Image 1 (cartoon, one colour):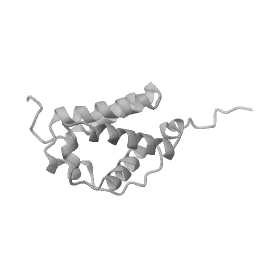
Image 2 (cartoon, rainbow, N blue to C red; image 1 turned 45 degrees about the vertical axis):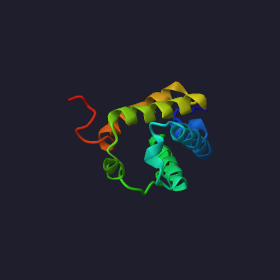
Image 3 (cartoon, rainbow, N blue to C red; image 1 turned 180 degrees about the vertical axis):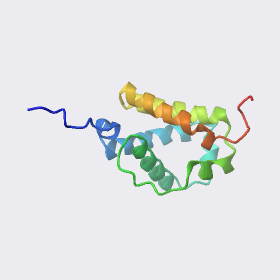
Image 4 (cartoon, one colour; image 1 turned 135 degrees about the horizontal axis):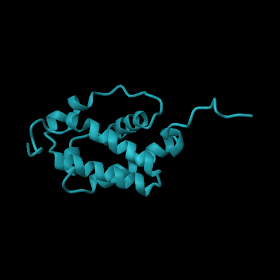
Length: 131
């Protein structure tokens, strides 16, 4: 019997699916909301909805089912004038969360690559880049 026909499991499947994504989102926002530099971004935010959006987005990033129908990253983030330094801090919280939950290093690296690719959609245009 050969298993060469079988496709490799997605990152989403490898980490345990929806329950694991939900746990990661909960721990991530615990870290972000405890960070005095970042908590202000969420003062007027419905956190239940915010957590749901991130779980759906993270599911897509990890190769799970795409059920995300929210706003595009730029539309949601550009009005917030987020500097690069704060974006980096959020990425560090996400990396720490995934590490703490025992997510394999190759998956964390892939998530970091996605964070790098979408940075320009999230940070304030022309600010904090040093250019």
